[in-house]
Amino acid sequence: HVISPEDAGNKALDFVSRTFGAKAELINVSEVRNAELYEVSLNISDIRGTHKEKIYITKDGRTAFFGGMLVPERETIGNFLVSGEDVCKEDGKPVVYFFGHSGCPHCLWEHPIFENVTANFTDFISVHDNFDNFTADEEVFSLFSPRGYVPTIVLGCKFYRVGSGETQGKKEEEAKEEEAKVLTALICELTDGKPENVCNAPEIRELREKI
Image (spheres, rainbow, N blue to C red):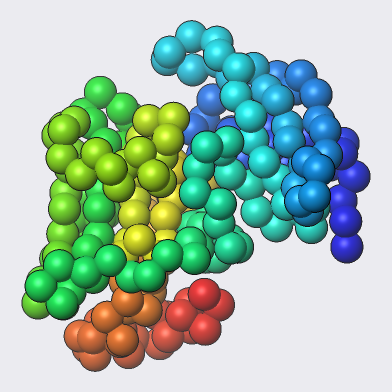
């Protein structure tokens, strides 16, 4: 099923809205030669002012990503993208990254959830929490968020998302609970279901089946 250019434009506007809560105005939509992609040019208005960005939408309408970003294989639960990269490890453990700063409201929403979830995997993952740290892991940050947008979460270089999980529930508490489950399920995929007391919870197993 191939979506129309008009639908691609609407999907790009929706992507910007749910990822950053930013306002965007459509400039134009074009087809990318030799690729199953639409290129959507937008004017985005956020705390940086108004700037032009390119968003790419797969022709089946399932995946959206920024120009310059690592091209994802597909989208999965919680609006995370799946990379074709090998799982990155440190001392044999998958590395999970958080990039954000205290001047960003979406980062302040996301960061405590990330901290709480990763605390459940202490012996099984290596956590690089770069909250208010602008110099660490620059290569990883520029690969997964080439425009420098935050929050950015990278889980084992396999799953990544620019933007928070705030749009996942009708109410704030619902969204926080859902985001915690999504992060837990994705990390369980990286740790082969360990620790079992965390990864074998019915709601986590259910989510893992959708990844």
